[in-house]
Every structure is written in structure tokens, then in C-alpha cells.
Amino acid sequence: MHPNQIFRKTPEARNIAFAREIGFGMLAISTPGAPLISHIPFLLSEDGRLAEFHLVRSNPIARAMKDGAVAARIAVQGPHSYISPDWYGIDDQVPTWNYVAVHLTGDITLAPEEGLLNLLDRQSEGLEARLAPKQPWVTDKVSDGVMERMMRQIVPCRMEVTQIDGTWKFSQNKIDSARHLAADHVDGYGMGSEVRLLAAMMRADPET
Image 1 (tube, one colour):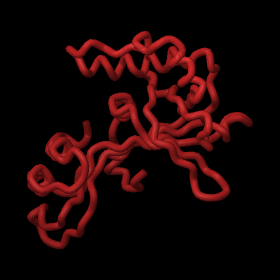
Image 2: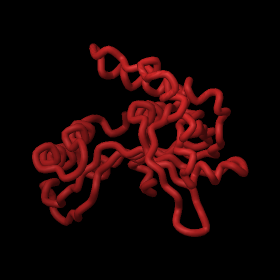
Image 3: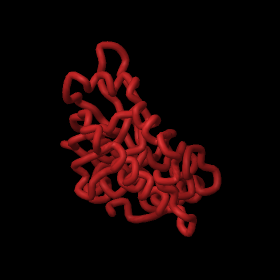
């Protein structure tokens, strides 16, 4: 997380809502060598204290949990873009990068395997609902035996979230007119992901 507290004033409820909405992040654990990282979809409870996900059974992170709980972090990335110093319209600025990121930290464990189908159903139900009026896909559409064979290859997991941190870096350390001017340039020339959404966030009140 960015050390400047001006970028970390977002209420926890907004950090939770953001992570729940994205529902996808980088799961990382420490190892004696390089950290292990997996890119995972996840479900986050309304209070932000429980994250549920699944991993391929052969995933090194899944194997690490066979001996018990493992300290981990899920990093959720939002819109981001390079910010040119020229875009502020004021002197003596330097290049930077604006972005949104939320980190969920806690212990991960293997969950009871009898709950795996329920987890998969809840994940697909929530995502398919966003595609309305499309008829939702459900696991019942899979031929007999196929779902069972596929499920043998994955394991359900859970994180007891003990810490939630968010960085919402929108050039809040600049005067409003400079931030808004930079947002206009992000809208037109931004380099990153979802730059128009980032521009809108830069124009909004950074404290909410």
C-alpha cells in the first residue's frame, strides 16, 4: 500500500464494496524463494471478513495449505493510468501513476470439500446475474458425471480476513483545478486500464 495517508482515507465500507464488485485478484503467499501468486475469482462476505475461492488441486498454494493455515494476501486492482506532469497545468511536477487497489490480508485454509459445489454455484449465480437478461448458466446444464470429474481437480478455500487496506490515488495532493485538468487528459490520452472510469473518479470528491 502507498505510504502517503492522503491516498488511504477511503472508508473501509468502500474498500469492501470495491473488492466485492471486482471479485478477482492476485492471491500471494510467502515462500523461502519468490512469493507464490495465483490469479483468482473470489466471493467476499458483506462485512469483508470472509473470502471464498477455489484453486486447482495441484496449485502450489493449495499444497501449502495441506499442513494448515497460511498467511496470505489478495490484491485487487482497479482502474489505473500513467499521469504526465504536463497534464496538471502547473510547474515543477513529476510523472506518476494513479490507481485504485485494495488488499485483503489474513490466513487461508482448505475448506470442506462437500461445500465445493455450493461455492461454485454461488460464484456463477452472482456473475451470471450481471449478464441479464441472458438466461443464467447453472451447473445443472452440465452433463451427468462431467461436473463431478472437473470438481475432483479443484479444492475449495477460504480466507479469514483480518486486515483491509485500500489505496485510491487520484492526485489528491494537487489543487482541485490541477487534478481536474489531469483527469481530462486521462480521459483522452490515458495509458492503463479503464481510464475513463479513473478520470471520473479523479473528478469526484476524493474523500468519498
